[in-house]
Image (cartoon, rainbow, N blue to C red):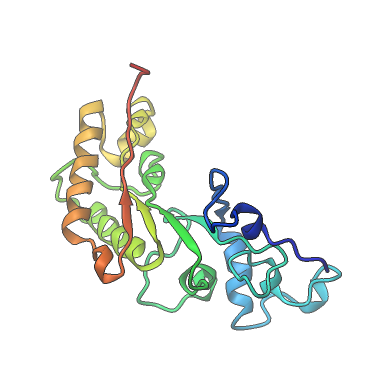
Length: 210
């Protein structure tokens, strides 16, 4: 089957990207098939499409085996197993990706705003649920990502009564203060780039275009 090296198409003769870098968002569903197949016959070989003999052919982060190698990707903490202390083959495509590939880790602030990561996320709330998740996210970002998004609270949460109730954020200022609180926690507890940790990217929120 013909290979299509997408990384080579992205880079110019000088090794620099010629275009804005597209980051394909990796779903947990997709990663599970790649990762678990490394440890067991998770997918019956008889179910493979014609021309596919190895699940790694579908892993774009594998430059040697992929049918369409591409070194950049994005993965969200909202879909991931954040506990890096336990082996989880469904996460192996990300956790044991090829050296030299690039991963942007999304912190999962959307999950907070949608009420999926429940807890009182207000600054200094002392909520154990929120603190456990806050701690897990920065450890996870440092463990799997080159760059990571800060754990922001989307300000639109105040317009969703159900989500607002689930996360404890009821006003615009509470969302801003909670984001600042998360930022300060990340800055204090991050591993640090010199120690192999992720670089952090800020996120700006607002309620108008001014």
